[in-house]
Image 1 (cartoon, each protein chain N blue to C red):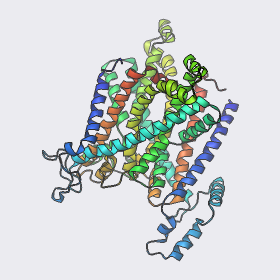
Image 2 (spheres, rainbow over the protein chains, first blue to last red):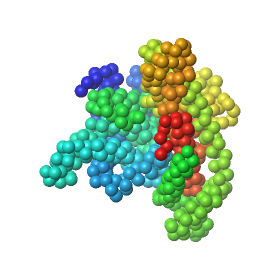
Image 3 (cartoon, rainbow over the protein chains, first blue to last red):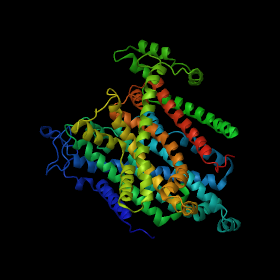
Amino acid sequence: MRKLHTFGFLAGALLTLLLFACAIAAPFIAPHDPSAQDSSRRLEGPSPDHLFGLDDLGRDVLSRIVWGARVSLRVGLSVVLVSSLAGVALGALAGYFGGAVETAVMRVCDTLLAFPGILLAIALVAMLGPNLDNVIIALSIIGWVGYARLTRGQVLKVRQMDYVVAARALGSRSGRVIARHVLPNVINPVIVMATLGLAGAILAEASLSFLGLGVQPPTPSWGAMLTAGRRYIGQADHLAIFPGLAIMLAVMGLNFLGDGLIDALDPKYRRETKE
Amino acid sequence: MTNYLLRRLAQVVPIALGIMTLVFSLAHIIPGDPAVQLAGENAQPEDIARVRTQLGLDDPLHEQYFHYLGSLARFDLGTSFRSGEPVSAQIATRYPATIILAIAGMFVALSVALPLGIVAAVFRNSWIDNVARFFALIGVSMPSFWLGPLLIIAFAIHLEWLPVSGRGEGLKSIVLPALTLGLPLAAILTRMIRVSLADELGNLYFTAAMSKGLSRRAAILRHALRNALIPVITIVGLQIGSLLTGAIITEQIFSWPGLGRLLIQSIGARDYPQMQASVLLIALTYILVNLLTDVVYAVVDPRIELE
C-alpha cells in the first residue's frame, strides 16, 4: 500500500467522505427543509442564514445540494453495483470458457462500444421514460462493458497459470476455480474501475438530468438544479454556480481517489487500461 | 494499405446495420403514442386511428422495419411528425451547425493544448508545468454543463462581450460554445502531449540529435515532437467522436441550432423519425470519424502493423 498518502489521494478521500456524509446524514446536516418554500425571498443571494442563497421557489439551495448528494450517490452506487456484478460475471464466463460464450459476450460489447455512450443513454432513457430507476438501468446497460472486458482480460492471463491448472487437475469444479483462484486476481482493478466509474455515473446522471431526462422535480438533483438555475443567469447567478460546484467536487474527489487507488492497489492497471 | 482500408470498411457495415436496428427498435418501444400527441388534445378515437394509418404505425413491426431500412437506402429519412416536412431538410440545416461547432471546439482544444503541453514537457516542474497540470486537473473534472453557464455569466452577462445564446451574431456567437466544448478536451490533450513529449525527450535518439550539434529547439521540433504527436493523433480522432456527443449538451446550453438540440427537441415531442435520424447521423458520423482516425494513424506511423 505505497503512495497512499499523497496529497491527491487524501484530498480525494476527504471529498468522497464529505459526499457520503451528506448523502447519509442529509436530514441532520442540511440547515433547512429542502422543500420548504419562502416565496417572499425568491432568488435571494447568499446570506448568513442561507449560505448558498434561495432558489426560484424560495427553497434553501445548500439544503437541496446536501439532499442532492443522496440522488447522485444512489444512482452512482446502483449503477456501479449492477454493472460491475454483471460485467465481472459475464467477463469471467467469457474468459474462462471461451468459445461461443466468449464470442457472444464480446460481440455485444463491441456493438455497445461502437455507439457513443451518452447518446445511447439519452436514447434509452427517452425510450423508458425519464425517472431515477430508468437512469440507473440505462447507465448500467452501458456500464457493464468495461468490467466485462477488464475481467475477461485478467481471466485469460490467470487461466494459464500453474496454480489454476493445478486446481483443475485436482478436480476442482469450474465454479470453484473461478471463485477461489480467478476472481481474487481481478478484484483490485475492479475496485479501481468502480471508483472511477462512480464518478462517471454521477456525471452521467447530472448530464441526463440537465437535459431534462433524469430525475424529475421536485426531487433535488444537482443536474436538474443547474438546468433550473440556468434560467435565472444574470438575475441569480448562485443558482447555476453552486450545484455545478457540487458536481465538480464530487467527480474530482472520486477521480483523485481512483487515481490514488491505482498506485496503491494495482500499479499494472495504468499500463494495461490506459495505453 | 488498400486491403486494410477495405477490411476496415467491411467492419463498419455490420456495426452501422446494428446501429440502425438499435435506433429503429428504440424509437418503437418509447411509451406514449405519437398518434395521440399528433392528433391534438381534443381528438376523437377516429382521428387518432386516421393519424396512425397515415404514419404507418398500424403495419406489423417487421414491415415497418424493412420499410425503414429501404427508405434509409434511398436517403429518405421520413417525414417529421411535428412539422410535416421531410426530416432530411431539417437535418440538412442542423448537421452543418454541429460540424462547425465541433471543428471550432477542436480548434480551441488544439490551440490551447499544443503550446501548453509542449512548454510543460520542455520545462518540466517549472511554474508553467504546474499551471498546465492544474488546468488539466480542473478541466477533466469540470462538467461542460457547468462551464457553459459560468462562461455565460462572465463574458455575456457581466462583461457583455459575447452573446448569451443562439447563432445570430456570426463569429461572436460561436466563441462561448466552442470554448465550452473545447476546453475540457484541451485539458485531456495537454496532459497527453506533456506525457508523450516528456517520454520522447528521454530517448537516445534525442540525445544523439543534440550531440551531433542540433540546437535543443530544433531537436525537439524536428525529432521528438513528431514522435510524440503520434499517440496524440489517436486521442484527437477518438475525441472528435466525443465532441459530437458533447455538442448535444453544449448546443442545449447555448440554443445552438445543431443536431444535438434537434435530438433533444424531438425526444420531447416524440417525433420518432426526427429522433431516429438525429441519433443515426450522430452515431454514423462517430463511427466514420473513428475509422478515419485508424487510417490516418496507419499512414502517419509506418511502424504500425496493418495486418
